[in-house]
Image: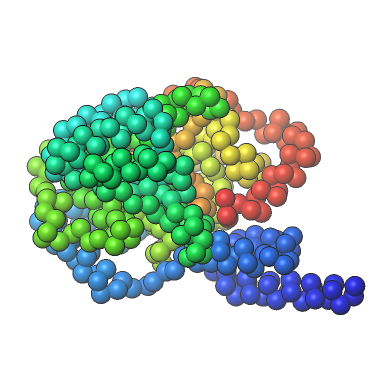
Length: 480
């Protein structure tokens, strides 16, 4: 018995040392895997090998990747209206936030564009009406990238429309996440392929397990139509996004339609992902009209920011942290999953303690109980610092929105959690025009009318069992 115990102790110490060496840059991840290896001493390191190992970052592109990016940039050179200095920003608040502007302006493969028009959708019905109309009018190509596509009523309508467009000669390309869309039936996929629709999956479960990348997902939502119209935000394709989920009811989300130069960068993100899942390089002279002239008359300034575990930087996290840290009057956050890292926690607390009006809206009902418990574990500490929390009561809130002062508003696929910042492929659009900020602020203020404020005194009275469950879920939060 003594030798067995000694073996287990040595095994645990060995696993701990290995995890510390492998995850020294992310102590929070090291802590959760050490906790798992303590609970499962014989298989903890095996779980880490299939679900925890780094995706595989490279500080520099391969020559082929570099040539693809150069080709794309050459195709939009002279077409895109770029902001080249802080004086070009129409939002003059940036003259007092030069550090933030400098950070935003040097994000790789992301540019603040000046010629855009945007529209916003708070529910599924108006979004799908606009999206389907744009798809019906497509002439050249339709590029779609979603985490989830379901084989339900909405998915079937979507399928029929894409098949019709493909039969009309429009090139239709679809990227689905292999885990998020794992329930998509073979008949659904085959019917589209037979009609000429190209569809590829990002890391299907068995393939992800083989590559030991099962923890990494493509969570982006991208639509590009004829290279001139784009969509991004929080909604996928399925009946629940129309509020038809028996469990969650009304679905509150935020999605946006953009027309103008920002669509070039949506297209670039899609092309990069398409090459990853299909091996095909679209950006060549053989595939014309991916980056057409927009002839845009809009005046909004928009920046498309993509991030993923294959990069050495985390630009969406950097943008959120820097903007919140520099806030002077207000920070409004809507997120279904609130699991900030240490840096973002510090920025939020510091903003609130310095007098900034910080309000965070989270769901009143949960789609994933463990994630909600991890979110709740952060509330007491932040409320004591002056942050105000609300829980949405009208249904389920899935929107991902950050509003800072009258400076910027961000909408996209990224939640305010560590999974979105570090493990998922995500995409967010940052808007710098007052009209966009005002509209998203009005939506947020309306959401507060449909929410219940969490009172600190009452929240502290929750049961000991709830607090213990929150602690355990918080320990696991870097993986949620």
